[in-house]
Image 1 (cartoon, protein in one colour):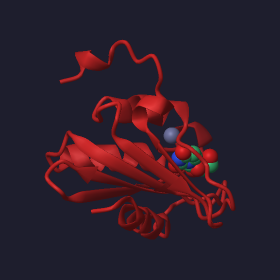
Image 2 (cartoon, protein in one colour; image 1 turned 60 degrees about the horizontal axis):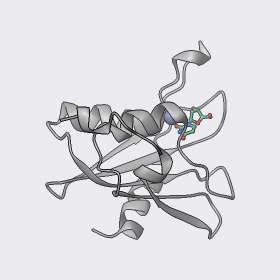
Image 3 (cartoon, rainbow, N blue to C red; image 1 turned 45 degrees about the horizontal axis):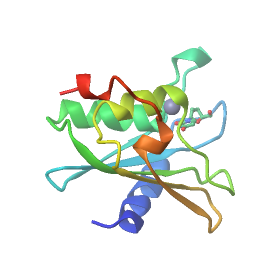
Length: 132
Ligand SMILES: O=c1ccn([C@H]2C[C@H](O)[C@@H](CO)O2)c(=O)[nH]1
Ligand SMILES: [Zn+2]
């Protein structure tokens, strides 16, 4: 499973987005350590603060399916031309289940892709090792 393939799955998941308020679709695809992929999309609400991001939606689905260790992540934001990285809340939640060196790729509708790691997205994570 390469990151390009994972990105395609994230892009596919964005098609299921429920985002009538922002009109900003997001898809996320997590590669679990057993080789399976779990996707998520953003789910908004008319009470805006209840919105669930694509990344946390994917984490919740994966944990519900019994998967707690993720080795890679891709995020697609097709309503932005340029890549849009995960919000701070999602970075924190993702870091619970990923090693700092795990790769993360994100991109929008244009050709640019950012390829980084969860450790770069959550630097100085001194509490990381409290996670099991
Ligand atoms: O990394 C991000 C950033 C935003 N959103 C969602 C929340 C909201 O539905 C919309 C606009 O912020 O995009 C995500 O799912 N992930
Ligand atoms: Zn988020």
